[in-house]
Image (cartoon, one colour):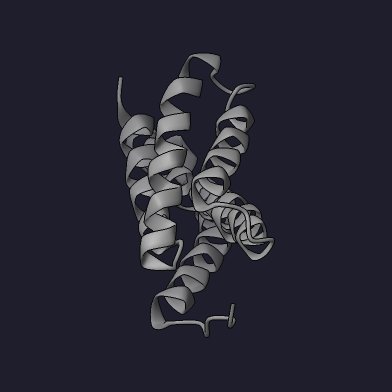
Length: 135
């Protein structure tokens, strides 16, 4: 399998993660944390970018692509990476394991179909944002 060159979306992805990792702590340390609405929104933004970026890079970008290079069947690759993704959410929310397993399978299929982690990252980010703001 020939390595894929970075696309414009890959570069946008990296820039978005870096900007978030730098800007959020700066804004929080500037005193905005005293404004509850702004603090919640800022927390939701950071939850929608940093964790999905890291989780998708690790689970789909590293684990899934490594298993694919070892020539395992695609269905097995998706199941294994999805199980790892799901189990990694257990300490945070054990009740979410079935949901994260299904999400992991869908994200794995998306990664195979699009040959990129961008779509899973975007959907994962939107999900985290919504869940963070939900009562």
